[in-house]
Amino acid sequence: MKQKLTHNLNLKVLAVLFSIIIWVIVVNIDDPVKSVQFNDVAIQPVNELYLKDKNLVYEFAEGNDTVDVTVTGRRSVIEDLSKDNINVYADFKEISDDNTVPLTVSSNKYSGDIDNVKCEVDKVQLEVEELKKIQKAIQVETVGLPAFDYITGDYAISLNRVNIEGPKSVIDMVQSAKVQVDVDGATNNISASVPIILFDGLGERVDLSRIKMNLDNISVSQEILYTKNVAIVCNPFGDPESGYKMTGKIDISPSEIKIAGPKSILDNINSITIPSTAVNITNQNTTYTTSVNLFNYFPSGVGAASDDFNGNVNVSVDIEKEINKVFNVYPTKISQDMLPSGLEGEIINGAESIVDNRIELSVHGLTEEFTGVTASDIKVEVDYGRYMEENGIEKLMPGTYSIPLKVTLPNGLETEQNLKVRVKITDSET
Image 1 (cartoon, rainbow, N blue to C red):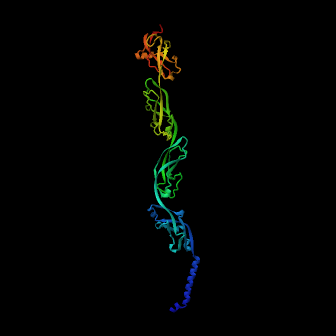
Image 2: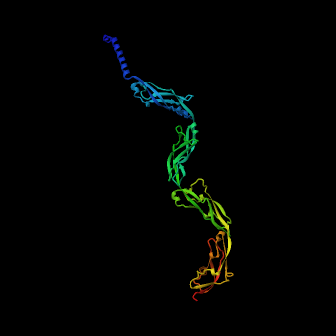
Image 3: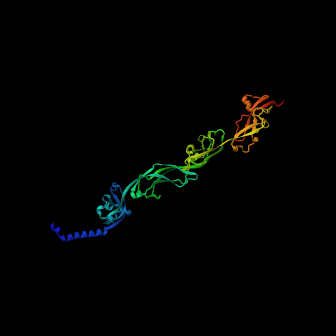
């Protein structure tokens, strides 16, 4: 048996070696070793809190956050790999004084069958600076113009401040935080969710790629108001001092105002009235001027269309001293048209208000109210009806009576006289 095993031993050993060589040759022909380069493999930061705890923030220098990786191994292994199987790590705990971090690379597939995996560079450069945090009030800015005769009114926002953090060099650029609401052509209130935009001192947008905010969008409600020009009117209260009178000239400055509010309300408003109690001319003997805050008299839901209007309106009431004139009224000019039918009346001269065959009628008023007025413009009547009413008489009988006169003066003129005449009444049939 031993002789059989050792018989031709050298030949048997050579046969085994030859088989191994043949196998190696075949394997290298069918599954050779090869290298493949995977480009732009993302660098994965590790221990980022290490920098954050030091109040630092980073970014990869010049945006170089990827590397090329070369993997060497059998073709059967290499060809079954993709870039997703390659992991490149930068451990920030190993950051050096020059802000470089070493890179480590591995494969999450066939790691034991890969001959070599290597990055094109062995470290990455970081740009590191202080982390800065600020807070900004959120401003609302409208874009475009509402429809004709409409303006923007008040707005409401869900939050009015935003917390911002990022590299100090970037945060120092931030001057304002705004949201923009498109109101172009609007006729109704607007509600929308809009993004927060950061602006620098020149009004340019700040790049948000290195900035973190505690919110990206807020809800905004923007009023859209209808506008309308309306007059301002006023009726003063009280009477001037005796002997003085309003001329009727009332100056209101401004005399009209543009108001704003819901169209359904403004459609029913044609003027804003200053109540008489706000302009009291009692016992005044010269032009009376006062300032009134019109805001106190706006209807509910209505306001001024312009922010420049402070509500103050100046009211000036013209007051002048009256003059007095005496007109002669002759008995033949006194009407008896109110005498009941069937009777005749004869005014007795020299009785009651008649002196020297005339009545001296004292009239007072403003100078301009007397312009062109003559005695013929004054109507004087025997007021039989008043006499009968005051004396409880249902029917006048023939006799002599003292009867009041009714005086009708041109517009604005007045008399304080209580004039009477004596009238002899007879039956017209006798």
